Length: 255
Length: 106
Image (cartoon, rainbow over all chains, first blue to last red; front, side):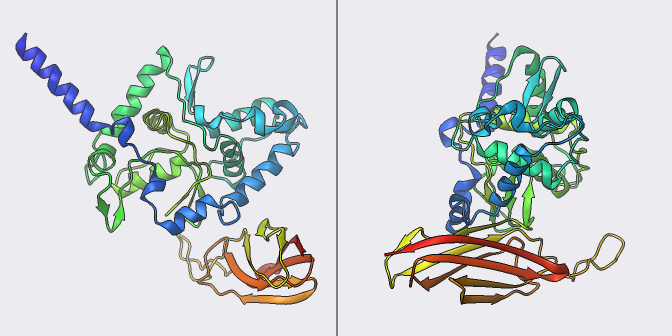
């Protein structure tokens, strides 16, 4: 009995140490230099705004056999899309699966507009998700975990804690335990996906959270999942849940 | 035409130094990179940006392959009179972009 209580206490301590406490959570923004912060803060110097403007045009453009635009069903994005990006990925009870924002856009495209789905990481898809994400800027991340989605959240959490690749590293080893320290001279952030899609200076362009996750997986010499793979969406889901309450910065700039 | 964003103060006093910002969507492909099969990716860059204030050239910049993608240029000029400040970019493969903004000088 005492032993069992001791084990439980140890497990609880380990769990408490693994995730940053809510008050100690810091967005990647706080790890950036003043120049990069200024770039994100001013819409006239944030290059991601070029994609947001493209997204706004796509929102109003008719597409597919239906001849409908996003705006024909959803109206003004400033009201209809406000807070939407803060709730994704979300559990779709009809499909019994998690879907992220990019998949949601493509579901609308194929089912409602009768148009071919956008390729992952295509300029159009990034532009639309940046435009939709922009409508939630400043709002707290608010991920719902219904009972059916609990195992999917746990799968994402397990992936975050699982050692992988030739370097045999887990996400948690760097982003929980070593966050704030340096990796090759660069600060290691806490891995809160607050501003996706992001304009990453290293990429010289806009990219999704899955592209960023692929970077880390390749970095530890693991084989990355394919774009849109359920494992990726589960990891996105866990990361967004872990960042719940933090403010959406989309479209963010990161070094 | 490529997308561009410019920032010009809407109002200024005559003789005031004003800051102008202009960013344009462009890949700025250097011409030095190769594909996975070893083929050279052809150069595709912006060659020049020109800014005109009521038709008078106030700033010109030549771009080279080392300039980043989606380049942001920030510079200053004197507010002389009300009117239109126009930015034009030209480059490889017939690239052309333009954006302008209105300024009122009191």
